Image 1 (cartoon, rainbow, N blue to C red):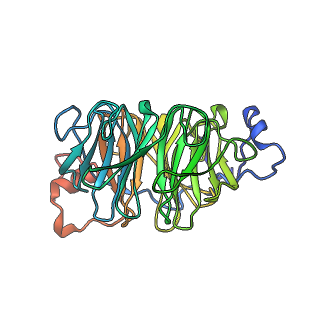
Image 2: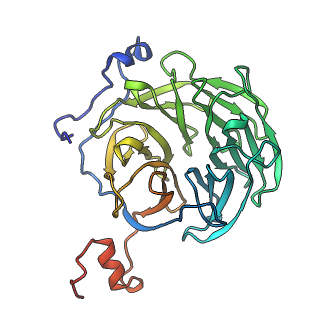
Image 3: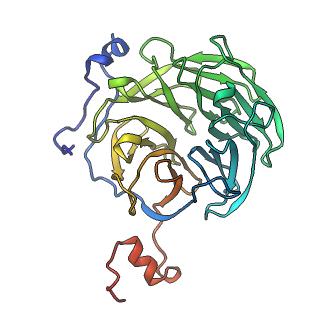
Length: 346
């Protein structure tokens, strides 16, 4: 991997970017000096592949509520699953179908300001809204190109006012709705903020909207205001820090820093709110801080991160910046966390 110390700041530079960047001289800062911050440590991993009551089969979306309950869009099982932060199963709802409360490959999940749970239902071309226990509330959407319709509904996010933002990778736009499903506006169809195949979406505490865009050789994070005004983009296709190969999941922490799941680079990258690279972690594999197919993530109110490794049978990895309490951790756990040989004694 090329060192970033000699790169300082870079802009996207590729032929495929030209239509998107015409008339723009500053795309957004991509890289700062690497190594300014250590990545979080792997605190735990859990999850079991399958179709049983507490099992996950290719989960695609994740979010967390104020109680610490994690919600998963359990894609191949056509349901929503609930777990606590330690991985204990709390319940589920849904089955395969098109009736209210049923799903056909749910992709995204988000918890609203009043605790309602919103789910993007891909093959039914709709968004469904539930109470936190799975009780159906309402739905909206159908297949098509009109306002409020979808072609490939993907991720979903809720702002501080309760408005709902949905990415449509088929139409290349983000649509914003009220919490009742009334269409408000759409953005990303043209201009500097044009999107090709928006996948992930998140909204920070200031109301900035961040979208991951699978834009062929111009893969990027694009930043907008909540009204859809373009602010900046950063990225490009590649392996060096600040570049992406299929960016999907995205979220922000309490400081406004941005985390991006870089799927085909088998890593997570961390940036400032304006796109300056901070750190990265992850390589390809199944041992420790490795990924097979990372997909989505969420940051909780303690700035802990929960990441779905879709390719590793839906394993959920829990990362934290909080220090280990020596009194509460066994010696075997210390050896696991720091990858010490089994023969090493206290």
